[in-house]
Image (cartoon, rainbow, N blue to C red; front, side, top):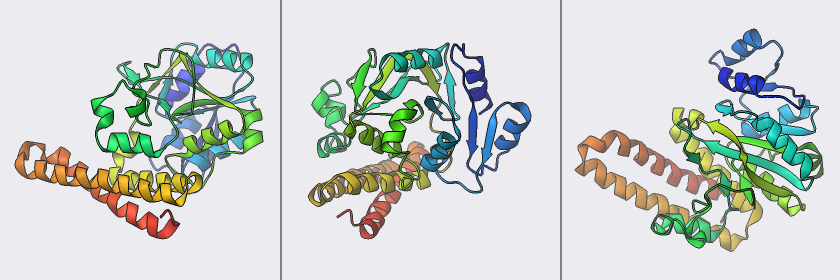
Length: 300
């Protein structure tokens, strides 16, 4: 968190900015650190963990800017990325959401452009076609691995680790859907913007480092469950009952195959038991969550 705030403060500033930190009832002392070390940063302490969507909504409601810049605590701004993004938004009034090029800490590319979920881009990675034909758009899956992320491009959706969003566009479609606790909220939001006639754009001239896997790596089983629940909620919201049935079958197949494969590896290759053990738990939790969600949400 401290490095993220410093990267914002140290980024060249042609535009005025305010920094708002929304703390989701963390217990690691981060909120106290922000209060002590960054007195000019506005700190909002939530009484409980409201999840990603609601926490961002709280921050946006407290903001006064023309643009909201939603930044995960594990992101670092490179050079004058903020000013570049503001300049692009000023020049392109039809853009609601602008996403920079995301980089891993070693400065290699992090895929951040997304297609809206469909049966085709859910099936292809589930049966291995995305791995076999990574450069073919039809088989490329939701994550657009075929796109080199080297040019400005209008896309369906962008990863929510770091986004610049036009406040005027938010007024027209509303804030993030707080029914999502973690995962899919940005996909849902981008879909609502696009349905309303706005554009979601990838902008590689601005670069941001995203360390990634912070929360999910601490509680992988819980976040696998959240991943399934959020995806099922998205499919219930935007797809027909028949499509939801097929989606359920594809995901059940995907995680069952993983469960069987990792079970075999766990028994046959003792040196990989630590790694495959985690995968086994994740696949089992995903299958469990699939059945739990489908019974409770009416997805099928």
